[in-house]
Image (cartoon, rainbow, N blue to C red; front, top):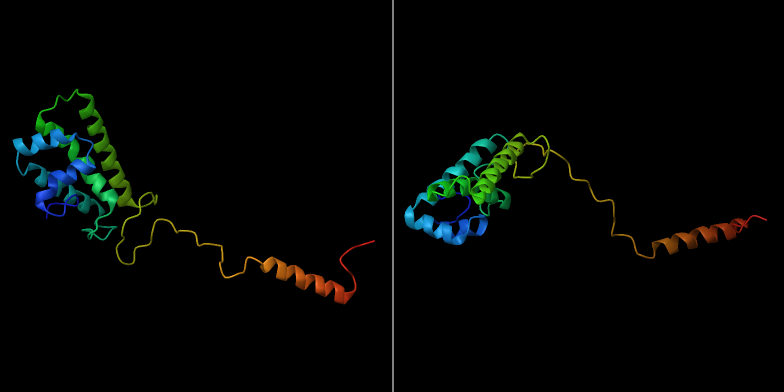
Length: 168
């Protein structure tokens, strides 16, 4: 398995380009410098996500993978990819990628705890969701003219009772 970001080994770089903030020419250069390295990193990040979510969620996730999981994996791997390319750690793009990876880790940990209900993922059998979605209170069974029927019924009852509804 090549991880959640790709369906086959051949399109690892294509999928990573699609989901990562790293420029496409950097990704191509990374694949030229270290062939297969990106696949290993994507797989490792995918398994790390699984290891944190295993107690609460049904992991490994089934295809099609949740978009949030794909984004997490790409955010986790981007900073490592910059490091592998030898980008200066003081470079602003590397700093942003490192911060983003830390935020992704925090989001994954929050999803693993599941107490806030921030991220909805496929849960294990019997696990209750962190929050209940409200049921709709609108019924489409009634006619749009139901209020007229109600007014007509009330008016006829008032006429029958001879109190016309007006007070003098």
